[in-house]
Image 1: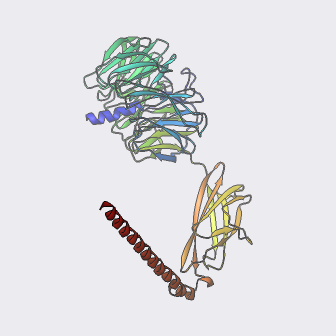
Image 2: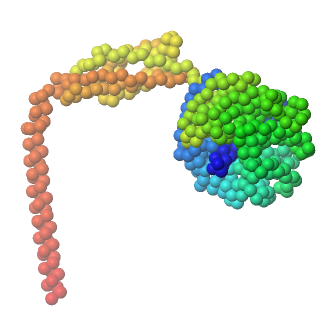
Image 3: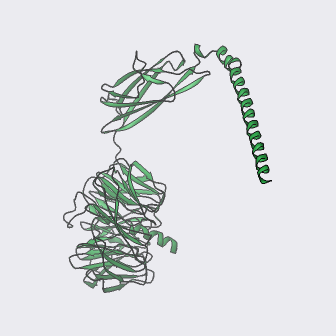
Length: 551
């Protein structure tokens, strides 16, 4: 069970990065630059999510992906266990660049302007300068060795960043790479990302033992320690919302809410299942995941008795999860969360009704991020995913006449381009490729590979090559138009030998035409033997001369 706990924990570290916002009331912003959107881990954003769970693209890295994305200048950053921080084009899934470290990158990067800050299992904290264009490459600005592996994400505080490692240390680095302070806060491991409350100058983080620490951001000194039950393991990073801190405690199977300034003002929800998820508050509701379920409960204790009872639970929806590691996000009227059953779920946030799910091939500990109407996340199947509403696609209808010709003839190819509702589509780009021979406009022999199609139809001639036996020619057609999904089609033409490829010609090739080659080979062998004999004679003469000189 210990292994399962540790795996679960990584998910806590790799939660969501949503739109940055300056306050809870201002949840909309143009970029998602840090884990769960801000240093308090609010993780609620605005904007419409996808109506369907279609996989728009998937890219397989060389390692499991626990990390969650952040965005800058139209690019998406996410780490992988293969040791790279990747930058993707979020629209296409193309890799713009990747930055190599010496260990898995499970933490999520923090982006500040043209810089990205992130930790790695190689026991280092790194800052890179981000390129301004898609063709650029990142540049390392600084890299600092720390005591342990960095699993959790960093957050900004004033002109610095705060991060913890799995040796129980918490660090404050200036954004230029100077160490402000380093404190041994716990004898146990930190897997979580600290909550940073700049207003009070306080940081909050739990260890994988059963203790929660508050510490001063100016010098790292511990202000208070809260103990949980003996079975508790605090892998969750927790949420600070309007002065209350919400956190789950792993095998302790509870969610605790406490006033950050008064440990007396506390209530507990006995989940009944292990839970490693970081909660979210949206309005008067609290959302989090556990083994098996996504939960929606009141954010405040309804009757003030110190417990959320079963009849006070608003809803719980099955996710068939046996780790409970992915943390949900809320946007509009939807809640999104990953599961160990390989699916990303979308629920109605008011009723808990499942709206859709998108399947992968591995556990999902990464937490989803909403960006430009699509959902982005990683999976332990080593892939990064974009899920959303697949745009309507083009349809290619290709008719070849005849389907079988001789090598001396041509065939006629009729191409029609429509949309999925059978409407003619104009202004498309047609790309042609053949396994042999070429395409041409009627009456022309000039090879043709790209056609800008104004209308919805195109007629081309297929010009094969000479063949000596029955062969096939594959014709590939790709249609593209901005705003519509590309599509491709392949059609096959059968080619018989033409008049220039008769049996007589083939027999000649196999008999008489070989005689000159045979004669040439024989002459070449004779010349080589003569040259070898001359070399041997010269060698013998040199040896005799050497003996005479020695005498």
